[in-house]
Image (cartoon, rainbow, N blue to C red):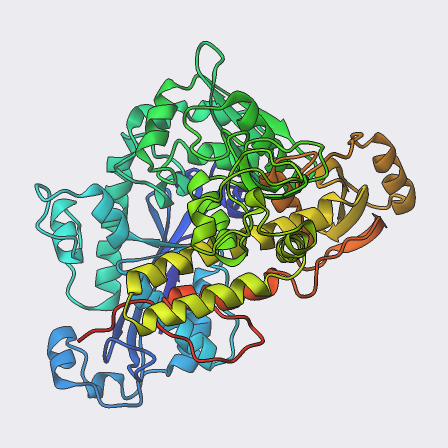
Length: 596
């Protein structure tokens, strides 16, 4: 094998230095590229195809630094059509080195470079495959695919396709591709430089911008990259504002500067975001101690400002709760607010329609009254149609007494807060009967009601378990080795911090608790925060590696609660089957009409 290197001034080799300037991006002129091409006996390394030739060119700033070329003995016959295509014959490779000696030499040649190939998954895939066979760890190469980049840049007017031979003609390559590794690598270098030159006029000057370029991002959008200057590489929240200081969009990231910069490159191709970038004049960053704090701040700021380019979380107040009232003859109702009236609440529901499905599932199971009138202890009215159908105990006309009615209400309340089996069993039996009668649409309606009920009660039970705890303090070791600590009070994030390296953990936690937001308890599943905030906190608490430092109160969920039904429900829903309790292994009837 042969490898040649062009001497260069050591002072110009700034690859490792440039890696630290993420906020600026790595200028293309300072990046060392290793453009590689392979010739093989077939199209699949996993299928047994072998490498017959490796060619590579190392280039930086338009200057060729070195070349690498060698034939490779595949220790197998080269198919005749491959020999005709490449000109590489069995006799040519019989004395060539094997891939076991070629691969380490190539990896040494390409060390510290960005790998470039035309149809990179093919070439890099072969190299990685043989590195794995040899037990060699694959270096963390960044990879640039000129075929992918060309598809984003070249139009049909430029070339009929993005094959290497077509692109070589477009960019007047000095080497004509001929299915030999080094010649094709040299042609790819010219194509790479041609693409970079064309994109330079569009404001693409760094490797990061080249890797993420898309024609869907306008030049005007790229020119606003300066808005990201001054933002730190820290977790936090960013706010795009217009010239009147109105908030247009709010987002969160573990790295504020990198994320905001991505809005001015091809990483952001949503048309709405392009429109927003065109209006934005400033970007405000709010640094947060931890990613969880950033997520929570984002939710609160979106609810406060209601930015028009945020689609989610803008109206947390527009929710619905299902309420089991506390009165002589309790009933179920849908309400917009939770009152301090000792009633039981399920929710919140973001959609009233979903709340109505949950309500229907309960009314299908428990024959409590559905009228909204206030009823006294003494009967004095005529029964409604539901009573005549046997779907209401009819306390209005004295058909039931408080003891009988109260027993049904207690079963209903138990289904809401502890064990949903009564509802699950009743609706499953109804679905089975309907399916047996081929009334599949009606069975599907009941399935959807049951789904709404299971999800709502499972969510409420999880939320209530946390929100009834006056305080939970938890910590987790982050990727940088430091401990992130959060103080949660009644489901609301009260404080967040990161223990300094070498700091006193006990003193830090004590100080964080003292400075945490005071949170008053209240009624309902989410008394102190939005459901979305409490769920974000729960997700973090349930993530791997979290350690509980302090729990004030009991953080428990019912063992036989709705959560145990969720997995079975999801499996049933995906196959459009009826939902049954997890502990009952009965046959499940499909609720869709079978194919005839």
